Length: 248
Image (cartoon, rainbow, N blue to C red):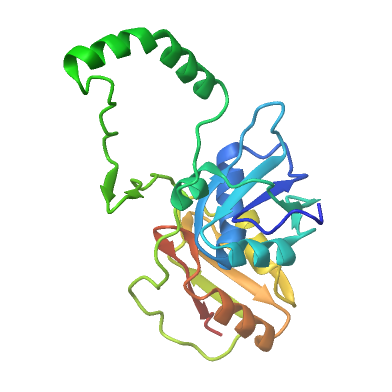
């Protein structure tokens, strides 16, 4: 593994296989998006791919920081094992312009080309340009550069910046008050986010309210450090978490 060069994509394994796919992807997003913009997260529940995932960052430095910081991190009670992937993911290869079709799709296309070689030659004689394939819809070219359409994905990271609304500041407190949380927020998701910081004690959700929560630390200095580090953190692309000291 040591000879694999840094890559935009990190391979994460030793994941808890009992966690549902959607929850797994959201939780991975929650802990990894702090390191930089995430283009995609791939997690399959097939027999061969269980307990594994791929996290694709826009920048290699983000992937490097994530690998170093989260190696061995206890994720759903199992330490994560992280490595760079050996090759670029498709989405990165497309951005670089080095993407090539592979696998059965490529073989099928080659067979079709061989079968239609004679007919294409005849058509070229009579129609001139009949063998030229039309451009793909949604792909624009300018001065030889190919601009790929954006790939819609639940986990696309939006541009950095905090959402509107300012929580009135309270005097320092070892307990933090979180607002603007998404409906799918869970105690486990928030715990994984805050357990990185020294002094973390517990997360307390409010019954009947998914948009707010409390996080307790051992002292005010430790809670302040977590507050500053995660202020505006996007748990999902549409929810920028707001953190304030809880009222005493």
